[in-house]
Length: 214
Image 1: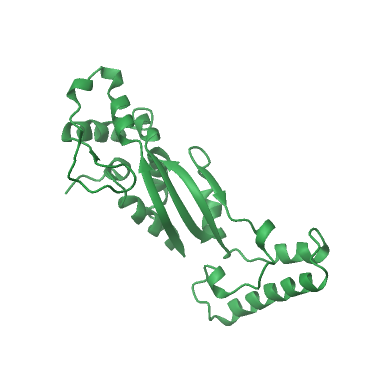
Image 2: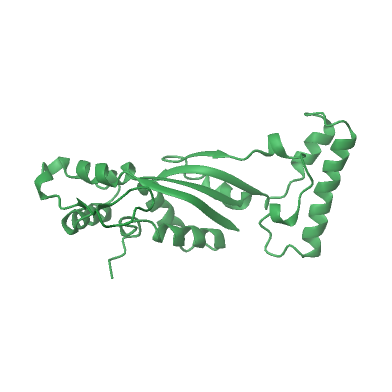
């Protein structure tokens, strides 16, 4: 299970202006403000012109050192996924920032339900056994007086399965998304396939995917 919400993308205008600094070719920039275009993704009505797009694509294809302008295009999103996906996401520490929900502070406030996990089949008897085991540990912590740091509290924390859902507000940029996309687009985990499809939906995603415009 992977859910991506509240997406915001900014920095195109600044990134493309900076992209031309090396050649002092600002007069060749053909990006513009489209007063008729609907605002989306937080980057307003700024539109990239064909000359700017051609240069941006050539630099992106040339490699990370040539495409450093991609680091100036910033993406924010709320992502909900299981820990098995987040563990792999955390491989990409450079260029990412995140603030997550916390089991340390919230586990034990209520009993858990199948909706709290990324199980493929919530009705699987083994899944239900795991869920019941965790909930029994929560109840035992309640009965013990809800002391943080106690044996019951530690057991409750340690019994949580890998499929528990976490929500994080993440901040990334187009350069790190490019690395993620090309590393993970063929990954066996469905969550990565969904993540890569989301990347393809971002504005001017060709700069990340290197796919040509149809």
